[in-house]
Length: 422
Image 1 (cartoon, rainbow, N blue to C red):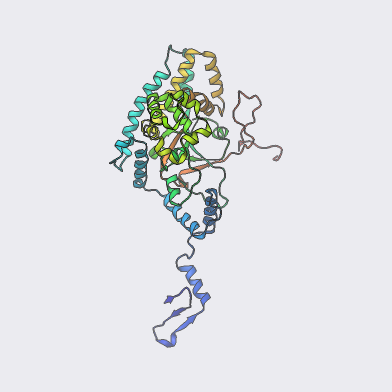
Image 2: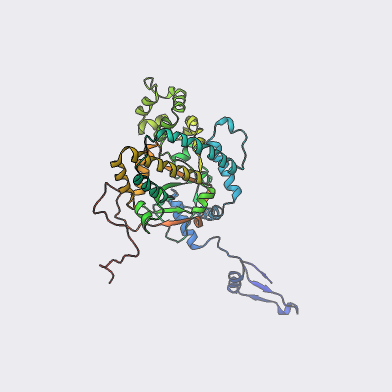
């Protein structure tokens, strides 16, 4: 039996030509569709999802070939091999390391990351001890509260999503470097610009109560987000400061490595007026317009190399980052309790609220350490099986303000709306 997609199906019987017969084209098509290979490279839902995904990445009218290529790439991004993650991790760490160390480097960087993270953890603890001295011990009551708060602190890793596809097909999250391969420029993050095209996917680090209510995470994140699977975060994630622009990068090094920033200024004196001759004057001189003139995005990789190549000193594994944050958060609360009881009571009251943990963590704790927001990064891509969708039901939620008395509660699926339900 042989079958052609353009003609009929011919059956040759064992008794010769008299049993030969030609079936109609429709019969052949029926057989092909029922028992042959699928003629369509993707389903309607996949096509719709790919079109929506391309449009969100500024491809207004994707072609048939672009849609097919997107669906095909999704399959690869959804099932990333350990070797692929390892090689992309190696490239990222290479761009964050001093140039003299980048000539020859191993592609097996997982063990190297663990070693580097351990060294960074030890050094950063020493630096934080200097930033947060403990002049005296807090009271026994305060110490007990601190242990309770610290023991109830957890972290989630979220990616903000403005909309989700209507086709019910969730796309993988992918690095800027992979998007470049598709000739897509979708407003890359500043970290990606700084590293010349990041090989990793970034997630914001959000602090929550470990034993909070069923809607505590929704209360703290008033936008639609994707939450990274905890296991993947622990096995493949690494944490870095998340800079939104060059000013945040410069401010960070001003506080953590002033000698590095001085060297950077010396290298770039020709790019600023002669009156700008120290780091304080540099930061005062730069504004959102000037910073783009002095350090434009297209030259960030070369012009900011002195700072970028020091970022390897702040890379941590997920477990080391979590340990450092828990330790330093507890030390900060201890320092406040020992020096300002009134402020400590205000903090404990705020931390008791659903949205209080992230509010205190991001707006009070990190600034004390002169840290920007933090980002957990996963090499190459994250398939939809590794994230869950965090939907925000309470669209009227407002950012936390000073102890609101009439704050609207986030939606709770266990609570009936008696205006619409008996």
